[in-house]
Image 1 (cartoon, one colour):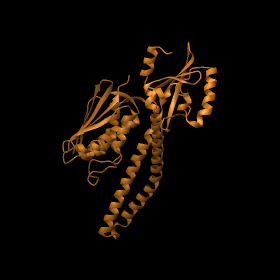
Image 2 (cartoon, one colour):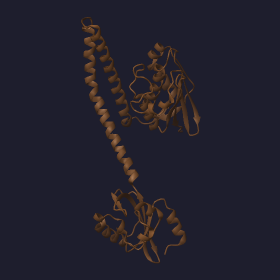
Image 3 (cartoon, one colour):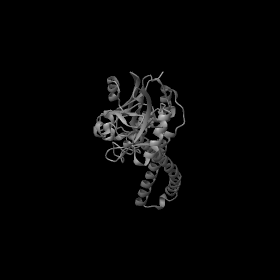
Length: 352
């Protein structure tokens, strides 16, 4: 019979564990087995292991068990098989099982470790669903882009060639339509950028963020001049990451700071500091700020913290920032009060 030390180790295991003799009878069960299958230990002791096997698998299980006893071997967790356990209430639970044979004075014993696979399978299914949705978004956005380009082209020609022939109301309608087409084109571009993140094939490499930030500022130079903005930054580190994606991150954060301001010219400051095993970055502005009730929702797709009529944007930029930061193993958040500017913080793990 198992020693007291063996029983204590057996009982403290994080997974369900069974000790089964060479005849398939359950000799020992731990508390995790009770939680997983709904039986008490007393209900399991002395019963054949097939009590925990769905009926459609029992004949095959008996055959495999007999074969295993004749040629016992360690079978590690992660067999790749679709295995299921039968609970007391008749429900089934997906499981993974490892087997470890033991020679004892009472004959061959097998330690069976049973792990609930429900959460792993749920995450795998969510991952597949997310991949499918992202692919759908990419294809849809890509296919929509060309019709939008054609519509915008004809609308521009209409505005140019027939402007003097349209009354004030018609011109107003035309102006609204053109604005919405341009907004849709921007939204499609942002959706494509968002969908491409998971399919980006660029390998991680050393990224000099000082050079990257200067490049982003050069891209935004027209907007910076038009807004009368000043952007300052402290020395930034070199990190391991995807340079294209990190460029998108800074581009979105800086362009937001340039757009969301009142009559005061934008003043933006970028800084970085070492915080344990990660770099902590901040992008601080003196803009219109964000009400605390919107701090979480602004990082979700199509969720905004400001009136779309007054401040342009697709509602995708910060969702894109969040995805980029998380793909780099970091996190992003905002600290702000309405009317008092905003500071966006994000982290990137520090790697040698």
